[in-house]
Image (cartoon, rainbow, N blue to C red):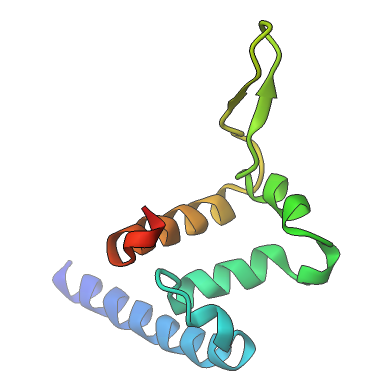
Amino acid sequence: MITEIDELNKRVRGLEATIRELVTPLAPALLEFTGISHVSAAVLLAEIGDITRFTSSAKLAPHTGTAPIPVYSSDKERYRLHRGGNRRLNSVLYTAAIVQQRFHPGAR
């Protein structure tokens, strides 16, 4: 079992190196963001595809599940968390936000 785990770890490291080689020339500006690793950038590139299909950040937000949803159950205007959208994208954005919160006081 230890040999198998060692082989799997080597395979993971090899895949991460391949991802690094492929993503670095495609998204250098994306990699400059705190909290975005090469693997996170690969997920963003693969899941979003051509970013020009979203004409604004307001159109991208529902796709990622980060846009709040209005709740009309009373006379008060309230919003709730949107549980739809692409959960992989949502997870990458959430992780980046948490990392930025740790390293940048302005993100808090």
